Amino acid sequence: MSPPRDLTATAFDTNYSHETAFDGGWHVRQIPAWRAVKNYTCPGCVGVILQGQAHVVAWRSDWIMGDEDAGSMRRHWHSACWRNRRQDLG
View 1 (cartoon, rainbow, N blue to C red):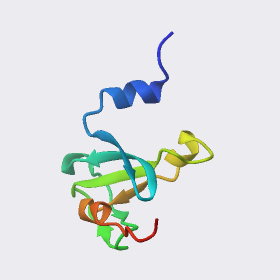
View 2: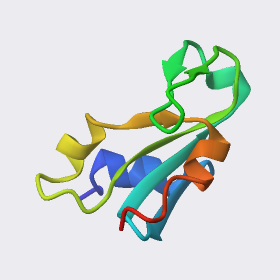
View 3: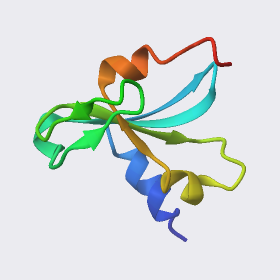
View 4: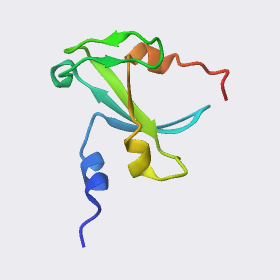
């Protein structure tokens, strides 16, 4: 029996990591510039992440409704905004 697709995909994704921080557990994927194919709004600074700009995609790993639901709420962050997100919220 093969593992679920999402586990197999993340096992070989070198841009993927799991982080535990003051605000819980997070799935984090580094998006290189060549894979950034559209503009996004960063929730950290509410600025635009331009097409072609390396950035981070993050979603909760400890979401009460499960990973699939959390994945639908993933957000694109500037790398610096992700590293410096407010730590006094926890």
